[in-house]
Image (cartoon, rainbow, N blue to C red; front, side, top):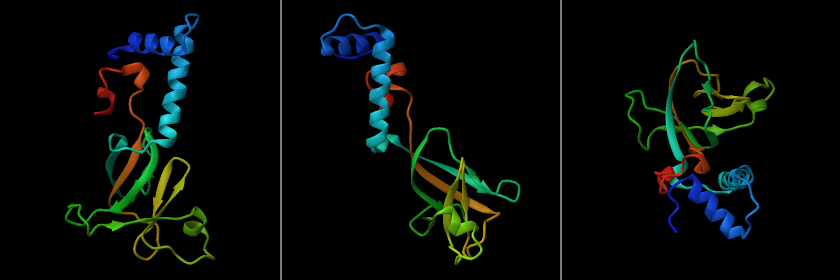
Length: 154
C-alpha cells in the first residue's frame, strides 16, 4: 500500500497495530513519538543544511536556527567569500574556555551559549567581523503533517 496522505498513514498504522479503537489524536501522537526517535538517532544527508552568517560589531554571535539538531561543522569563509578546503574549521570548546580569563585562549573555536554560538578568532579573542558557514542537521517538516509520497525527505 502506498502512503500518499495523512489519512492513509493513519490507516496503515492502525492496521499494523491491529486495532480499530484508536483515535486520530492517538495515532498522531504515535507518529510524533516515532518522528522524535528518528531525529534522535538518524543522521542522513537530507537532514543536512548550511547557513552563512556575517559577524559584525552589531551582531557578534550566531543565533542558532530554530530547526537545529546538531552541528556538523562551523567554518570561517575565506576573505574572497569562496568556500573550499582551505576554510578554517573551528573547534567546539566549552564556554569556560572562552570566558574564563585564567584559562589559555582557544583560537579559532566556538562555543554554545543558550541560543547562540560565540566564535573566537586567530588569537582566541571573541570575533567582531567575518563570514561563517554553519553546517548542521535540521528538523524537517513533520512527516505526519505534510507527508506526500515521501517528498518530505527531498
